[in-house]
Length: 420
Ligand SMILES: Cc1cc2nc3c(=O)[nH]c(=O)nc-3n(C[C@H](O)[C@H](O)[C@H](O)COP(=O)(O)OP(=O)(O)OC[C@H]3O[C@@H](n4cnc5c(N)ncnc54)[C@H](O)[C@@H]3O)c2cc1C
Image (cartoon, rainbow, N blue to C red; front, side, top):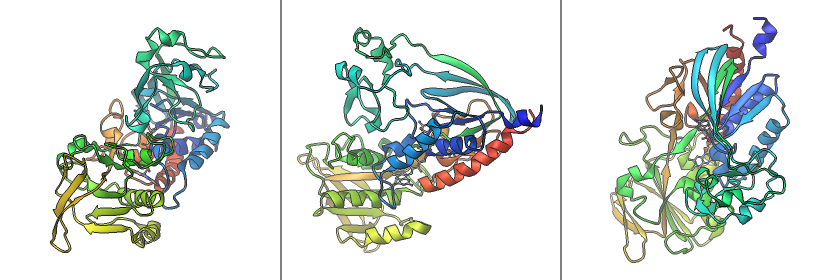
């Protein structure tokens, strides 16, 4: 094969979070064709669910928007949403992949005018807000969604109402079927990211049993103006303002019964979330229970700033358990202060578990076939035929994920040029 043909081989990027987006645009902007495959109806991954970014406490939507524009303006990038890779064969320089694209039931003609959603009478639990509220069965996940095209839940597509929904441009198609594509690509970047560790597995902390015990990712949605409480920090049991709150670090992390590793971002995420509370309710009291605080390198300044807030108390301790007051539904955090040896049983309006990042490649996003190498936790590492980037490779903050994915784009270009 001629060198110019080798250089034009497509790079497949699986996962359209910040890591996959970065790898895709970096490779495409130096002239390579890229196929970007995302399982959800929209790009953006977990970052699109965050309220603010540490350390600057700005909105993640502007950074994502810049990347969406780069994707939109680059004809070399083809995006497939609601799609998954089912099979991989071949080797670097010459892979064949089978991709299944699930039906969206709304075509690309959609202008996101929202008329269909207004007419829809079926409500479903909102997966984007972790089921904390209800949404229409035909919708956009959030106002900043890209592609800005509605989608319909599969079950609703079978209903009689789905056939009667208004659409000024005729974009609704409840008969849409799944399609299977076969593509030839030169290299593959696995960027399927992470999912929040299942807090119900941390039995003594009562998540799922105690209504006012939440998790850090749920708290991101709670703080967001498009979240279940329109950004007001209200506790689930009675809608009371959250004025006394605790964050429990390493909930299910650095623990051989759960995730044995440190996710690197949870301490910073709790510090950031403490600022959400203090900003919204200046008289609120925040307590952070920690084993040790991990805010490396440039984040130390952010930690110092948060530590200077007199409304935030730091207790070095891994709480033993959380009980619930049956009348008030207040969670009661029970344990022993490691520094003083004093036992405590402190009640709060709400408790947030700082759960870690589990690689999806360990469970729901395994690389098909035998083309990947994994470490003991399920992260995709060097040694296989498939490259990995971002949190599919290691727990990372956004800056780290972007840096790693830029480097992986170069590796993907080199791998694609290998003779098949
Ligand atoms: C509570 C919390 C708060 C945080 N706050 C910050 C912060 O303020 N600042 C910061 O820098 N970092 C923060 N982080 C870290 C940040 O979320 C990650 O760095 C970032 O999400 C990594 O992006 P990613 O693209 O690697 O993974 P993801 O965001 O998980 O994206 C992966 C993408 O792959 C898709 N996917 C999954 N499986 C498949 C499949 N089989 N096929 C196709 N697509 C698939 C997913 O749908 C998703 O779109 C926080 C983390 C937590 C836990």
